[in-house]
Length: 261
Picture 1: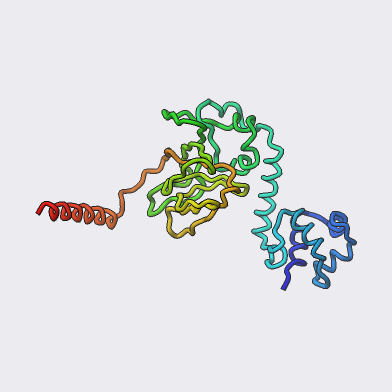
Picture 2 (picture 1 turned 135 degrees about the horizontal axis):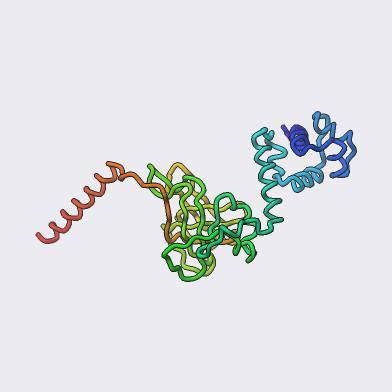
């Protein structure tokens, strides 16, 4: 069952468009829009494609899923932020810029995705100064999310990650290292699990999250995490981990003793 009619009405309402205005945008008559919304007819595939492109939604979502009010709210917010990002005009206060490593804060992720090639944008990002000296291009990212935290250990939401740029095509990537991955949709932080010729598989330190595969040619930028600044004090390791470490040490001693005898 197609949900296109209900979705057209919900999107039109969310965008504050009349049936006549929507019809004008897609070269339809107002009666056709009414028929779509009431389920008496469905638009042609050409019209569906135009609507999907115009509103920035996938054809699959328009046809197979009835959009919720919450999804429409976030859809509007995302579109507003993307539009603002494309018209970004160095709005960060100059007072925030003190030199050092340029910092990409969580609330500037979308702006960075759009403007990462702009020298004006990069130069006007807030900066931090730390006693580090990375070779090559460096950047700091504010971590968004808790996927790299497990049992309160690891990297935490809001931590500042100190990173060095790597060429995803030319560099020798290190499995097990933590990377910040920038693509056209998001900025994510994950641990490199497996390197392939065309794809890279990343994992989260929290095993409750699934691995994610990135197509190499679709990665915009790749940054290896060289250090992190956190205001969060990690708790002592879990008792089970301490016991495991002790058992491994005992096993190593027993192996060495056996070799001597």
